[in-house]
Image (cartoon, rainbow, N blue to C red):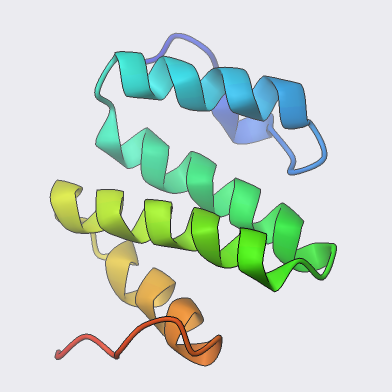
Length: 90
């Protein structure tokens, strides 16, 4: 598990967010990768960059599927809303 408390990170803290993502990758912490990539997606979406937001959403979604976390459905719905994925079956 990461020792850094990433929950305080905001999308505009790009350098800290990038470092947290790299650390989570190094530690193979899939659940934190889901959350961190979702934070990155939120930031890009707030700035109106749908392509970048969907890139980060896709990363979060793939790691959510791999980790088996329920958030995969929410991430999938967001990708579907942007025309980037097909809906998951319940």
